[in-house]
Image (cartoon, rainbow, N blue to C red; front, side):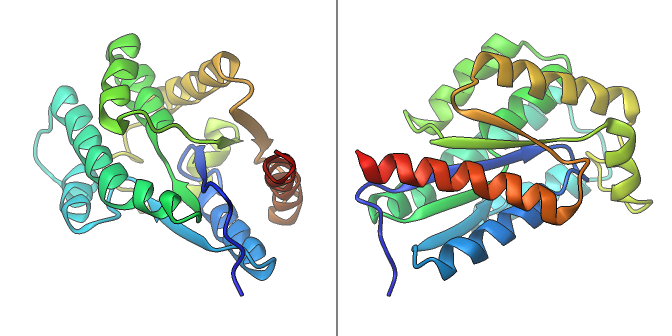
Length: 213
């Protein structure tokens, strides 16, 4: 029997490609499901039919894509995702685990692509229409290590280069400083099991706090 929260919980998983965030998301999903919670997992971009088409362009298009076009494609995917999937699931009292969300756009398109960070934050606010994660887990790992983990077969975003990904990491860390209550850093240089134990501790604390309200 699933345990539904009185109000759903929205937890996002952020970090560089190669940080291990997706592995941890799946481990958290398995853990919470075993504990009796009603859990759904999703991702950005590409959760829904429209998003899958956008994801294919963003990650695999071989021609030129302008930085502003890239930015708006991510935002379009997010708008559809929030309205068609995330909010309805939260309204049913489920725990929604999302692989990337608003912070990715600010880190990648803002800091990485050198777009206007403050403008991006405003555009993100429009895209999510008032929704904000209850918790964001930021898996921090050195840029060199992350790139090694990704391997040689990289998609369009992964293959941009070390300088770009270094800027992305800096952006994530700046966002954490601005939002310390929401964004919690997890040291992703450790073993998968150690990273999961650290992750689980943060997630369990949040659930306990919500149950106490």
